[in-house]
Image (cartoon, rainbow, N blue to C red; front, side, top):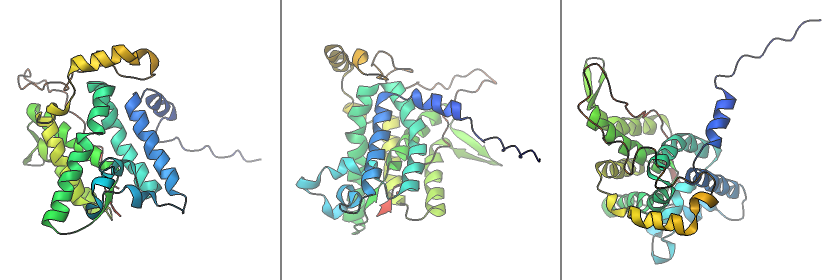
Length: 273
């Protein structure tokens, strides 16, 4: 009797993925859960989740301002949601680990959703006179890539591509162009707006939207968030300080600083794959 052929080894370690997922911080978990919930809701045919929550320029008024916050959570199908989740998760969990859960909630529910949306509406409707709707969490993925690119640029201004030296801050723009070429129904303008806001975040211009640390500590202590909420990241437990590692240009010769990986690419017209 012939011995069955052994299955080829998996290209990834399931145990490591499971460990990684179990260690995700609270806000990152909630974002992934809401994305999953909206995708499941979209499976029914009675009510269109995409039509309800997409960022549609001509549909924005006082009664539909919620669209400025719902569009990153909504996707047009399984693969769209999967690619965006894969792109966003490592970037978002790193941000939350650096800045804390409360700061992440304040920024992503607030300006990191509404500012890219407002910029997109201004250009799409005000300048181009179009009404293309967008959805997808890749708005946050490209925004975080833009922020990380600015931080990396301060310590590593260029990367080499053959004989050419390319500014590090252009990496998200290159990724935006490549994604728009390789994938259909992707919003180049939506991604570009996200990258521009990410640049502002990396340069520190959006710090004004971050609640004072004294207030965050008071809320945490008053509600005992660290004791009550599993995987909560306290303002005093952040990994790298409030606004991340301050890059230095005084590295010893032959020792390169720790650059930020930017290989994650996260789009109705979709934001993302």
